[in-house]
Amino acid sequence: MSTLNQIMEKSLSGLRLTREEGLTLYREAPLGDLGDLAHALRMKKVPGGRVTFVIDTNLNYSNVCDAYCTFCAFYRTEKDQDAYTFSVPEMVEKVKRSVQKYGVTTVLIQGGLNPGIPFSYYTDFVSAVRREVPEVHPHFFSAPEIWKMVEVTGRDIRWVLTELKKAGLDTLPGGGAEVLSDRVRLKLSRTKVDTANWLKVHETAHELGYRSTATMMFGHLDEDVDILDHLQAVRAVQDRTQGFTAFIPWSFKPDNTALARKVKEAPGAAAYLRVLALARVFLDNFDHVQGSWFSEGKKTGQMSLYFGADDFGGTIFEENVMHEANYDCKATTDEVVRIIQEAGFTPAQRTTKYEVVKVFEGPQAVGAVAAA
Image (cartoon, rainbow, N blue to C red):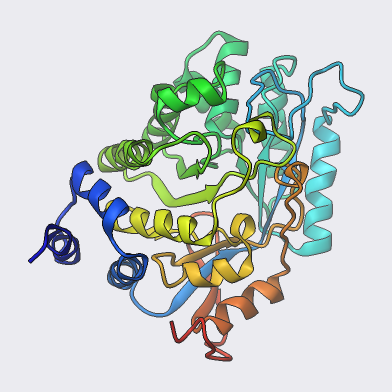
């Protein structure tokens, strides 16, 4: 039996892969074989044909940011004419409109790393949403934003997260990870939170009772070894805390970014599916892996359900970060349900914490994707 087959058999039997074995699998496994392995492991981890999704939207409170990431087309300086920072009442109204117009149950909030915003803004925002829009789950503030609050207050991560928890926050989105390799991060965003503190934000949050997601944006200045470093880092935190609900990879979109001078094209579907499948295989302590139809397109999103994904993310009625990179991909609840059904699965609406609240009818059509 070849080394590659031995690694795949080891994984299928439930044994943990080493970093070196994961690297071999990533580099050498035929894409179809890797996808089959990932799908088999997904069906063991999350049995049955359900694919979950959440009805949500993404809102931004400020595009002013002092990180100046080379991969970002969203940020502005405070002197730019189109810079903005919305007040707490304005943001609460945006949340209310999302509920009234779309019926969202979760709102993901993120913004630029704006040093001019006082810490009270964030706690006031969380408590106002909990008080005025109690039907919405506030899924607010990525690790870089938490780290900016640490810098603004001069307090530590635990204090910041404790105060936010008192205001009503209990989940964090996994944004701002990019690739958890400081060799890469120093080239992408030199002043942004480093790998150790990104991980520390999430581990501390888990210790305080938060749940969070882990993400990865690849396809820029990263290499194979960086992807394995990233997966190994979040797997180690999950071993200690079991606080991550899901892992979500997506690919870099270069348009309108400074990094486009070096990276001309986004990774294709094959590259994305390979990373997704590897994540399912390597992250043996994660229950859920999310297929990012939003970043990769709806057809690739369907294929992701055969490459290890058991979750289809959210509806995304409004989004501005990817929009600034000339990438728009949005979907209604009905469309998400139909896409999942057409792929041969049973859609199930969930909460932010992956509690199923509604199951829809099963597959409506079994076409080329479902037969793959």
